[in-house]
Image (cartoon, rainbow, N blue to C red; front, side, top):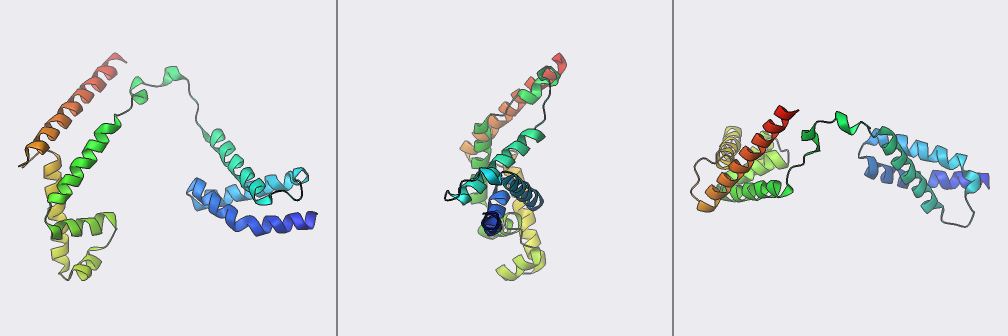
Amino acid sequence: MAHNFHDQVIAILPRLRVQALALTRNRTMAEDLVQDAVCNALAAQDSFIPGTNFSAWMHRILRNRFISDLRKRRETTDIEDIPASVLATTAPHEDRLALKDLAMALDRLPEDQREALIMVVLHGMSYEHLAEATGCAVGTAKSRVFRARRQLESWMIGEEHDSPQIKARVARMRSLLAAKTGTRKAEVARS
């Protein structure tokens, strides 16, 4: 049985690595997790019932080991030692509004600037590759990205708005930000 058990462990290693990488999102931590799970499985080899699902048993050991490691690394602190501002959370709807405003502003950009900005910022493309892809000079590619960034920044901080809806949203976001900043200043003053 021991020989068969070890063969099954070796055969499942690639799938364990995939699961560990999905859990940890870090190759080194994933390798450590797989190694620890295999050690646990070898130590508990006698508890495995032949004929049952070996794969599920191993994946459960890996998952449980991952959870145990998370619990060990979790910081604990006395609630009295934490400043009140740490416990405060931002409203997620403000983030969604900001993203919606950004999407609207991106749609307003000229097509060549929007394309250049997306290719460089989101796709990580170099200016040289952008220039090749769009058939322009490298300087032109850099200029398009620069102008797009500058225009987006201007719109997002509330300058040069021609749309009443955007003006209203910017004013609302500024008042929320001012209220939040005032609240945090008051919390800091109290502590």
